[in-house]
Image 1 (cartoon, rainbow, N blue to C red):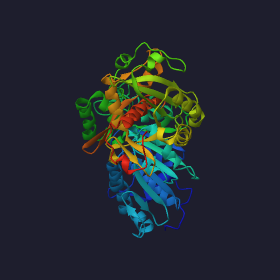
Image 2 (tube, rainbow, N blue to C red):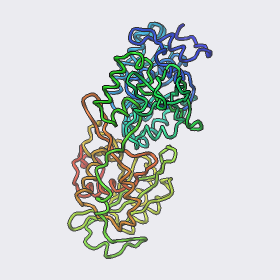
Image 3 (tube, rainbow, N blue to C red):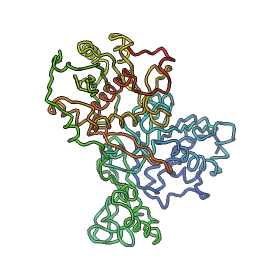
Image 4 (cartoon, rainbow, N blue to C red):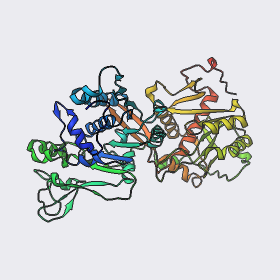
Length: 539
């Protein structure tokens, strides 16, 4: 085989991998991972691997990347994980190691003349493997072209912030394959959302005692010496299992792989003993997540519904103009806009929301007006938003730049460039403490986690006043949809705010942008770059 030769189409991808790949000094064999044969061989636009830890998920992803790269000359692959450390580890200990220590790959597809580093591999047949990272900020991924994508540790990636941008990288591809992989966390998590929209394929095993077919999703199947039938307690043999689709019409092909269905874990007493020990020392949630590969519990929320209801007063507004009583004692008025659209999640709701805050004499942020628009197209609401801001006397508006750059531009044309700015969320990994001005992008770059942290703290400190609780019902639910996830990378840990893709959070972000607009107007934020060094001026 040479880099210029085509692999025969009749060769399955699993057979090809077992022929040409070497893992940890041994020729790859899937014999002890029988459930992976279908994963290797299936051709499907979207695949999900929902797995426990230590089931060879990352090795499988690396092998699939390599086999597709050698089969298709000039094939482009994009691999993404939540953090730089995770991506570097995958690149060095999985991808590069398999390439370098597989003689047939190294001799025929690697000669040292191409590009070979942690974030980019180019093989002799012209295939490219790009590696990057993103949890809630997809900016570094924009502009990369791909034929297939692997989104690893997807449970730690914010779906609506990252996934649509990642998918756009395959917009011009003739292939367009995407694989999600990860270990479950909460019931609100991205991976659970994907699983609900997948075929929910389980590795089912027939009990030789009572004849019932069953799969592993709870501790009821964990016996003292291996897997057991939940009906008659007879031992189960995972080598004789097969995949069964519980939601066969779904668009995502989803595979659930847990530690107990590994044949060797059942056949080697010491390995099964380790699973039993984990049952004793792990919390119930951790055991379900990392051993069984099952979601459990709910995400952590740092504010309660009662806290938010306590911020509501008796004011109830339905139309403009606003009540003169509402304007009494207001120092300055600002607004925030979270533009709708941009999510491709099935069942997702993305609305445009306008939020107007007035600063009171005791420096509280009083809600002067808000509106949730039903139209998802951002540009459809610009004229009305401009009219509302003009009638109320809004001094400065901050709009979401993620999906609303065109809408923000139109709003500037109507209200004037000195009254409209745009904000783009980013991650703390970019060195943004809270906010900085980017002259190149013509926008404020904001640390997403830090600014939401700050606003939640403002809510808890009663620095915000809401209207009547009946009018706030939808907005309160939007805030309650947001929860905190922790991303572990080596010895370090990061927090991110996320939400289920089908549970909107637009009202929260519109409030955050309005709160940020007030900070900008009052000069209460410490910018990384001095505003006077740019052409930007806030009126």
